[in-house]
Length: 221
Image (cartoon, rainbow, N blue to C red; front, side, top):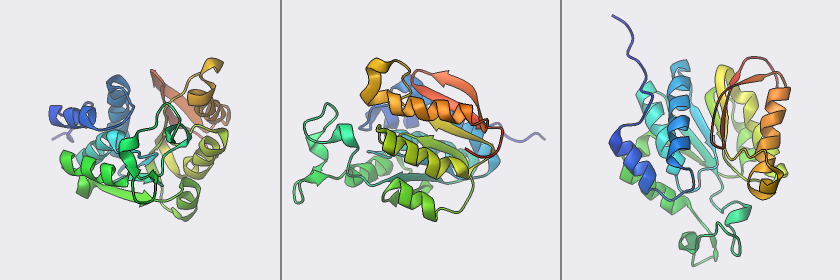
């Protein structure tokens, strides 16, 4: 008897939960992320996300992880990235904590997982990505970088988490925009993407909109 084949697309109820969740990832890129996560799950290792926000993409990683019998891990300080602060285009006052006056997406994230029935499938690391990466010791089957869009933050996410991608595992980078007109939203992820390719450690396997999927085929970063 052959082993069961990993799903390549989420069930309708999972896709509906993804579409209902607060966030920015379009459906086509979400489906590409799910397919990558489902394939990476075959390594039997955790699937890790950097940049949780309110859990929209976490739903897809968690469902793919559940199908593979592994855990999804998501890392975020939940205070919002640069472009989500007051006065910027992606600011949402609905996720501002009225008591402290700062963004706090953690309560919304928890409600997102609860509504999707995925609370038990996710380990949420609440803190800064570089500090979390320093204490993380295990290999992972997938790292999905979707955090801050400055060079400082995108580089720190790459340098902190890419070393944990297991041989044959995937590095997925979101918001990769080669056009310099997208300097704020996509140039830092694009530069990290180029660095990963030029390192010789990763080989691109697919591209979907602003999502790039790379496989570890060498050592280092």
